[in-house]
Length: 219
Image 1 (tube, rainbow, N blue to C red):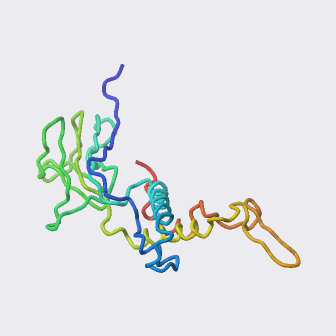
Image 2 (spheres, rainbow, N blue to C red):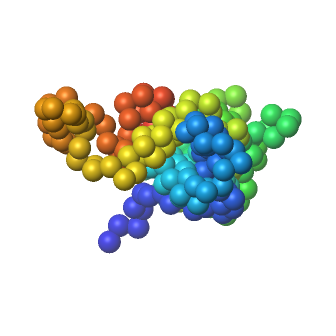
């Protein structure tokens, strides 16, 4: 049995207090609900959590800031010399001094910060050999880092609110019914009919377009 099988595992070390992408007040403002009206707070909170999870799943990433540990095995089997090691989540957060919050160990030994460089926006870690770019080696590489957005980007919040509005407006409606004409002649359009719109459960086209730049297509 081969002992140099390549793989990677990501673990959440410190989870975010909340994965919600918008606040309850923002949702109320978007839906035209008075901020003082608390009668729908429980339902709205559930919808915010559901849509936020749907956005994270659609983009294949977590937007809220969390700390992670990525474990990579036998990276020399699948990375060329000079090719970066990429964290599962990004952007990597930088501190007030602009230093990325990331550490790297190789086979149990910490890798000196002078021996690697990082592109925080893409979570790309480059191995260095002096002034030259080298290759990542070792059988086990651990990357501990903090990643996510603070604040959540405005277009991501906009997409979340658009999706939330579609879901909220669909409450109590027949999910298959798209349109209805009254009074004398009733014309109904159901899901699957030509020209049917987007249901509250599906991502609205506008939200999809706003989220496109953030979608991770492969890991």
